[in-house]
Image 1 (cartoon, rainbow, N blue to C red):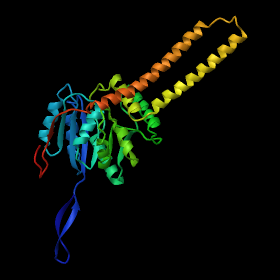
Image 2 (cartoon, rainbow, N blue to C red; image 1 turned 120 degrees about the vertical axis):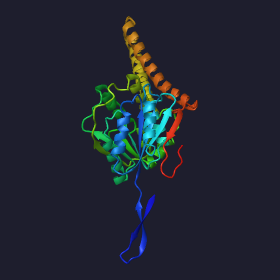
Image 3 (cartoon, one colour; image 1 turned 90 degrees about the vertical axis):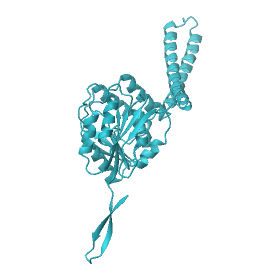
Image 4 (cartoon, helix red, strand yellow; image 1 turned 60 degrees about the vertical axis):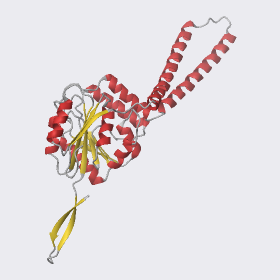
Length: 336
């Protein structure tokens, strides 16, 4: 989109010169119990905007505090910048981000958390890097992460799993703070299953990727919203929903222990023939039963996880349920 501007030529002739319109950047922020942090974050984003056509999409993931009212207040204060998506039930961070991406209109979309660990100016640096290099994805990376040690440990596990299962390039760190091009966002939005993993969906669309070192500050929310259950659930989605490697591992385990069983059975027969008085080994039998039963249950669990996700997808389990969308009116548009 371009804007026209009249200029007087040196010859005295009046001519129209077209100048590029500001780049449209959407900042998608999933909000969960962020009533104390979301206001200052949005105000900083608006104040420090270097000149982009800025849209801020706030997605309230059924918070239990006053986040809904805080987001509505921001909508009224900045009607040309803030869009509010209110979810009817808690869906999880990645599902909330999917809701935000489906309502974002920018040419580039920055995804950031509501805890103010990522300074607003860093969001604009990510957008500038994506625009400058024409990248589809720009991940942030940190010299020092200020997460809780348990969160850092899980991040390492998730990155290791993603690197092995999705064959990521060495050295690429997956971060929730990133910038996506419109091309990438449109491909992510095409996924309709109930178990989205934003990084996995983005990496399926493109390998035109860059990283940018950004600042990382301590969380202003205090206690992390990530519980062990939520972290494990996300790890299961990464592992099962974006790779069939666990099924192959289960098959290899089955083959491996079948071979061990065959060798053990053959050696037992030979030993019994050579020494008929040899007593039957009760301890070895119990150990074998425990090992084989454990492997069988493990394999059944992996297969069950795949079947469970297929069942929920086939049943039409929604990614999220939107209660309302409050979108401020930009110039020349009707308010929704």
